[in-house]
Image (cartoon, rainbow, N blue to C red; front, side):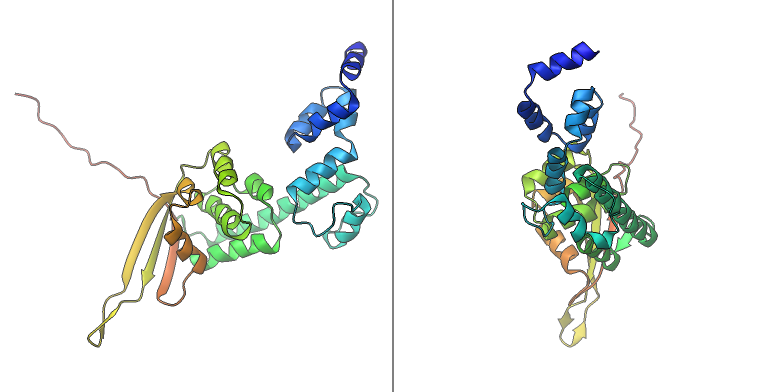
Amino acid sequence: MKQSEGSIQNSIENDIALKITSSLQVWDVCSLGSCSRFWRELCASDCVWESLYRERWPALDLGKDSSAQDIKTHQLDTQIEPSIMGWRAIYIDKHNEMDCKATVVLNFVEHCLSAESIEVGHYLSAIEGLCSMQFGFKDVRMFFFKPKLSVLLNLIGLHYCIRWLGVPAEAVMEALNSCHISEREVCVRWWKLGRWFYGFRLRDESRSHTFSLLDIAMGKEEEVLGVLHRGAIHEVIRVQISVAKPVSTPWSVQSPPT
């Protein structure tokens, strides 16, 4: 085993090995670090975890030249232990913090759901929560783009990425496809005040539309996204978002051929 580790270390220069490691995602770095002592030490290095940290949370209000100690000072309000040293520990602490924040939003939405539907006020409150908690695109992908979650939670994360984070459509579609949620469907229904006709107000109007998450990412549902973004305002008196119900085909008995 020692000969194997030595041969790996001798065959790959440290800077090349570091470049390979820095190009990986965090779960791949953890897997690679379990291969041997050489890779474990390399994958635990500060430069690898600093890169992972800055890539996942680019909105951090610090310059690229800031040190790990600067980050810890900046995040005292998140109660990072002063004794924690190194970027790997800071990354883990930040990940755990975002996990707890995601749980708060998930529980809030689950509490507001009624018969697999949510009112637009609660929907927008969940998105505002993601914004105030400074969720990044990778946080949303990790915590909200899960097939086992309600598609309404998928939609909340998707809407936040498109309108608040401004994530490019190509990146969003790749995330939806890789997480296997792109074809999940949502139904949005909204009610508008009835129009006035010769001094009489007509009955309130109701509209509904069913679409997939991929349709939203591709920009095919700008009207619906606009309704969701504005919420119940002006002539729109109510907006309800629901899990799309599967369309059933009526069963019929065919007569045997004569």
